Length: 488
Image (cartoon, rainbow, N blue to C red; front, top):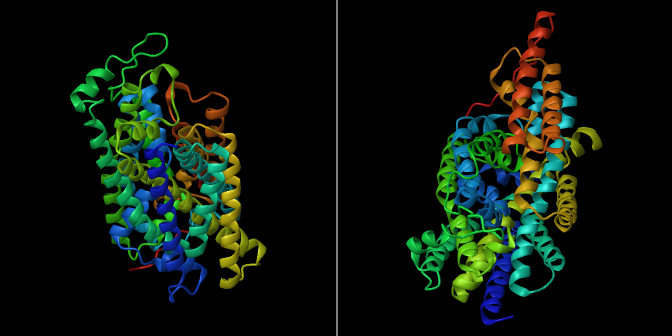
């Protein structure tokens, strides 16, 4: 390893130790008495901490290394993956207070309040499966950084990453995740943005004007211009699909819903969601610019096609060693925070939606549930590691995870909140149908027109839930009991 790699490695290791230390400190707090305290941070998050947790949970491998990699295929329009997330957070802010007021801590629990056991079980297992995939994507991103910096194999780096994330998550629970996320957000936003400006002004890059001028001339191995500076190359169907995906997956994604449920009140949930949205939209261009530097300024880089280590390679080559260490630590921050959020979310769902109602016969036992939650986190890490060792495309893995967990439940969730005539059977049928349509769109049709499968899946789910509800109501079937919300 050269001096830059050694310095970067030291900073990354210190960062990992700091996150574990936060977990240890959080685990000693005396007010953590129940499993709900462990998993829900005692429902005490204010808007700023909540915004940081939302941003950090969503800004993972796909939003950093994934965007930089996809600049090869889509140019700067690859940043729409995160811009759309910002728009999604702002749109979801209008329904965020409902999560805090519902007498539930998980998406399946909210679904079950209106649609019953069958919908509860189906949603729980599809949501858990999606979080396994999402955890694997974050491990891929972190391990790729460590592999580039140290030269060790990707597999070894993935194992190290998994151990560290499991350690600090299971020690302190959601309080440690929320506390660490404040540090994560600072590293992700300030660290990466500062590094981007330093890299752009490197003599070999020459500033923004020269970078964009060079980028316009970059070609692939066949001599075709890559159009790297385009903000629309990704296509409007994909942009619309991204926005729809986030708007539908945030209300049905446990790692996001759990954060909203952990707010101290509905107002904090709404304000925090807006702040997270603005922060995400502004930040989106940063990893795209760094990816642009890699494909434009590293000799022969674009000729080799899309490079999964584009962000790390550009950082190592065009920034001072300390800055390189900070930006790579920021990527590690992003991926670790997302992975830990996925682990917490899966543990919460398994404990609340599987263990307590079906294994422990509906009996709430905090001491037992804390241990079940921790064991679940270890299992999530192990399965995520297995996925990381067998998959490579981060954004593809994340898109599939988002789609399969949200295409079906979103319609049932929205109608459960606002449509008084929806029936139990209609909710269940729409959840299953929307999920099946999304799966067919992905695995049979291979996402035609670049449109996310969550769009056709969601549309069909809405059509089904309204049609079946209308038919059943016409036959005299009673509407599902409304969800009761707590006053604040």
